Length: 502
Image (cartoon, rainbow, N blue to C red):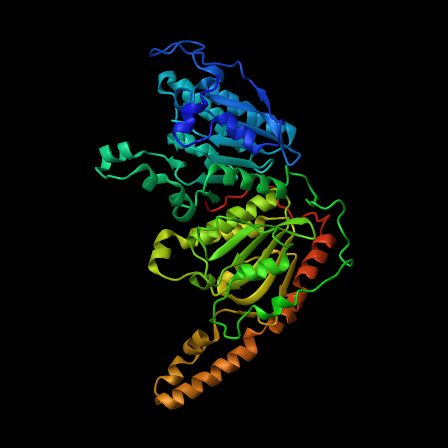
């Protein structure tokens, strides 16, 4: 019944093999195995294609129930007809009703042309149920072959997309059409391969070397994210959640990470790993917009989302792509009530005409909107720089963060002291000789640092709740999560919904 060898010749696993490798052993139960195509058209007969080219059912991953579907490229190229589409839509509906994640393994030549508008109807059903599921259950897409044309929009709606080297191809318009329209020669891999979507477009969230490693990472993701929306619920892998004043420990290594020079780079992963449980951090979109780091982790078993500026890239400045990346991640965490931990070290929004032309106003607004709208637990640690509008955007008290802390190295101001001195005292320095100018400038820089750059000023106004020692960060965050575990939003405005600047 299954043409395994045909897939193996393409260097790929068969649809059924993929399901069995991903799920717990002997847990898969197929649904709809007798459904076939209904159309008589263009040399296609009714019932010609077994299970209409997609295998659907349910199973478990690490004991967690999931619904799954896997397209079979050996059956008329995995093309989507009406029945094929309706099977996938029904699988998503089952996941919604069962309150569990849904996983789609995409390997399809696209819409089945022979079925005409009925194939498009199948896609429409899928998109509808993707949208219904969004924010209620996690949706995961694995691109394990071709995914072209309208088919790309189902993964595009889902929460996480996995791409695989030398296998994944995603694009709205393929190389042949591009050649006919623009006369441009481009390969399918250069147009929509794994590298493209992991590092350039930002469409993919995980970039894996092969199918086996891909399925392993999916299992890791399922283990850490909540299976469905549930109000006031902490997702933990511990048999019981420890109280915040038990087994208290401090990490002295955190106190040595921030360099003495404020313009010197460091790797924010060192801070993240010093806060979360050992080996628990699972990074999302690692290769895209590397000036910001997002991902999941655990603190004493409790799952959290982490957003951190990365000084190693672009000095951690926010740009269009990093704003989008963070905003999307914030909204996922908020959907499932995952606490959001923000680690701030941001010199501002990245300047330049390219960013302005690309719409940094619109993209930066998404970040502000996402943090403001989120009602889950929000805790912000200002590690070093927090300048200008970017300070506000990174989960500030003004956007209703529950707790904002500052390390002693924090600098909270409109801009850096050097730039402020040049703007404020530029006229006075204009006619000074070089030596006098340098001395006067340094005096004003020191004065600005003393008056505006230290965290005690923000703490005095209540914009920072406490100035804490770096080594106490993990315990402070955990205590806050415990006290806020039953948090309910108090402020609301009666309206249908807001209009996020997409």
